[in-house]
Length: 120
Image (cartoon, helix red, strand yellow):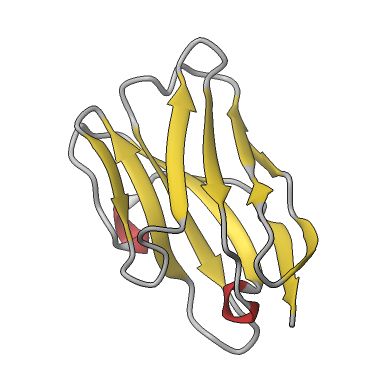
C-alpha cells in the first residue's frame, strides 16, 4: 500500500527527491514518516510530516525537507547537500495518528524501500 521510489546514485553535495505513493486507503490523516537503514545498522528515523508540520532527525535537519500532497496521497522528502553517510535504504511509513512519532513500532504501514547511494 506504500510504494517508495526515487532512489539512486548521486555525488556528495547533490540532491534527490524521493516519493512515497499510497494506495488502498486515504492517508491524509496519517503521519507519514521516512526511515533509513544503512548496511549493518539499525533502521533509524529520518523525517515525518503531520498536520502540524515536518520533523527531522538532527543528522538531516537543514538539508532535508518533507512535504505531502494529500490529493495524490503522496509524501516527498527533498534531500539536499547529500553526504556519503546518507547512503542507506530509505523506507516510507504511515502512522494512524495525528501525532508524529520517531519509533519504528509506532508506524502501522511500511513501503518496500528505495536505495540511496551517495558517492564521495
